[in-house]
Length: 219
Image 1 (tube, rainbow, N blue to C red):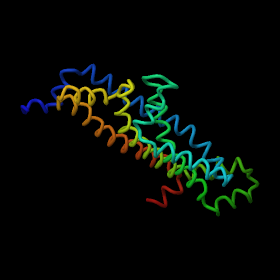
Image 2: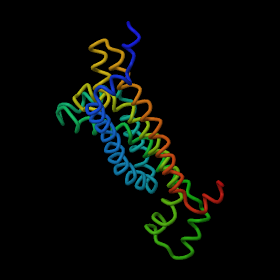
Image 3: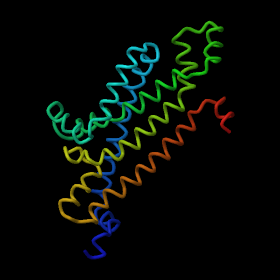
Image 4: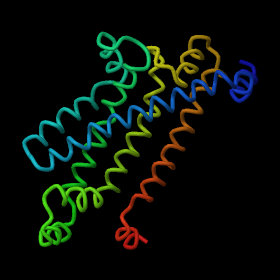
């Protein structure tokens, strides 16, 4: 192979519109799937924190979605949602549920007993203790789960190309089919860089949502 065959930057420069389109699709797949997983996981974690038997069932189901191979999960969605964006998002959302659910559940269950007792002493209802004490105290742990799920889904979204989901995986698949390293790396390297950027960004958001009292303690 010639040295220029590895020039993935040159390939990106030669096809900027196509590359940005696939990059946008990849970001959309990740953001939408993590948002859906968060919307599903938080209510489940709240119910699980109040009902131990449900917690065991929910943890088992979330773990099941995590253990099924990603490509098999994508294929499983095809009879129900067809090909393209929707089945890709659904499969990615299922994969993101476990880290978000577990972190939210643990965060709520380990909220400071002293803070909860103080809220009870002030006459706060169970719902008020949840929204004003437990969730704020659990927010750093919840964000850690979202951070893990986001970085994970950036990588998994690359295989959405196998069912027409788009994203940077299209370039990886195209490079494999053409035996062209420049095309393959034009997809693979940005995926890796996107995962690093996602980790840094969500990590920054995680620090911003840290309650004031915890910020002072950690500082």
